[in-house]
Image 1 (tube, helix red, strand yellow):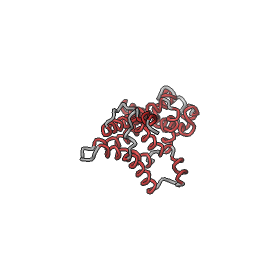
Image 2 (cartoon, rainbow, N blue to C red; image 1 turned 60 degrees about the vertical axis):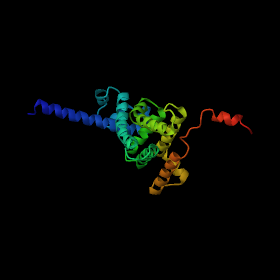
Image 3 (tube, rainbow, N blue to C red; image 1 turned 45 degrees about the vertical axis):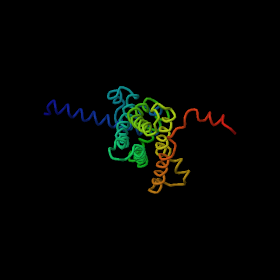
Length: 233
């Protein structure tokens, strides 16, 4: 006869498995039909569990949705931290060069698509809605990398990290890199590429490198445009 510890351990294992199945099913279903279209019945059926498992393990559909976002956020935070770590290189490489390397590392992470396609679609949907799930992903994974990049750009540009023009430029670069994953169809059709192969990766990498080495982050003084307008014609 199994003892209490064995019974408890078996229950915990089954509970953990059910939670995992529900989270994976939620990612798949929300990726396909969005949060509003993902009924609790559809989620439980996709997870091959009972309808009552959702309130039992998560309390509500919303909490299950956030748990799915949290899992993706935790994974993304680890991957993005790999890019951010390049900013801490203690070698003789200059900060602007490390900024460039960090962005290229992030670019390659986006282009390799090592994660399930449903993850990309899930994030794309909650990013479009800019809902609580995206707030969680943004806060856990994107914001820390963004702030590290802004701080680095501030140091090598000599501008304040609170400078909105500088922040906007760093965010614009990040958005462009993310778009190669989430809006890849625009690039594929625009370039008449069937897929992103090695040569395409090289060209995109060169483009990001050129952008980092351009004057894009050398923000003009705030009154520069006014001076140009009032100058001699």
